[in-house]
Amino acid sequence: MLITNIKGLVGLHPKSKLMLRGNEMDDLHVLEDAWLLIENDLIKDFGDMESIPAHILNLPSQISAEGRYVFPSWCDSHTHIVFAATREEEFAMKIQGKTYEEIAAAGGGILNSANKLQIATEDELFESASVRLKQMIRQGTGAIEIKSGYGLTVESEIKMLRVIKRLKASFPVPVKATFLAAHAFPALYKDDHEGYINLIINEMLPIIAQEQLADYIDVFCEKGFFSVAETDRILKAGAEYGLKPKVHANQLSVSGAVEVAVLNHAVSVDHLEESNDETIATLQNANTMATLLPSCSFYLGIPFADAKSFIKANLPVTLATDYNPGSTPSGNMNFVVSLGCIKLKMFPEQAINAATLNGAAAMEISENYGSIAIGKKANLFITKPMPSIAYLPYSFGETQVDTVILNGEIYNGQL
Image (tube, helix red, strand yellow):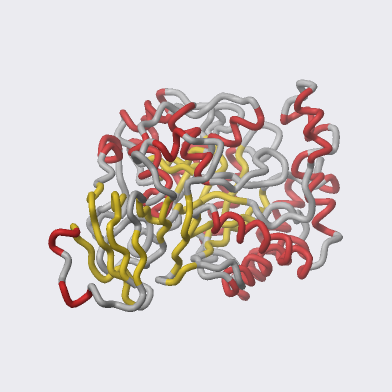
């Protein structure tokens, strides 16, 4: 496939560049008036139209992208798209001013989703998650991480992870699976934390390892959920089974979650709506990525993460959706990039890099995804005609994604 007359080929980074730190995120690298050649499922070559080789001009499969930009696909490194039902019944509670903690205490929140998921079949969960994933792909997402965490029993957590494994086998995008049984304590173990942690470590983890159901292990380390000591224990247990750590950190308070994550060499700490100088200093001495979820802040009405301070401190910053039924019922990465600019005060170049190459790095797939480079997977999208790159986050109320290309082929929405 040959794409010609591209107004701007966006996100050109050397294939060896696996992540962007600090002010490196300012440089998006755009080639104007460009062409791009795809062979099989890889980016074969690219350049400016003045120097396009004559022998490729007669290829039968061509797309003219005049007036349009070509982007690497969004890489969404934090989602919870396997769930049984939406939670719009909690929407009014939020409007009334109920906090995240108050809704959870009233039987809503994660436990609400867990109750619904436990009675859903694996096929039902697969079908509903497939609908969500198709929509996300049409909006430009070309790689995704999906977490469990709405099962909270041995049977239901394994059921969720098996659904994620089916999604990975059925869709033309890389799917990373994260085991998040430590999302909340189920009602049965409200006063028996030790009992539930033993269930995770001694019953769930062996099955997950045997069936190769997960890449990562995650813990919601927060007041009212899992303590720092409990988080440390669970992460270490996961590591014994080859699961790399990620942590839901500092969403509601500066809890010590970042410190325990770094101690366990976490791939990323996600949320970080609450942070301080110690948070930043801890991350400066680690290789852990900062994954920010601005649409969660938007929906819950909680503070937005301090992206500018993270970038100023030379940290690698990622943007992701946190798509879930309770706190972020949207998988639209275009809106996340807009919020990165509007609410986190990131420059368009920073936000786009955070949602592409750094998103891929947070899933450890940036060798093959997240930027335009010869030899990388041809997961791309072509925009509608746009006056500039900044127009994409500027026009937050509509999608600018026109054509989605995955593995070198136009995506038509079929399984």
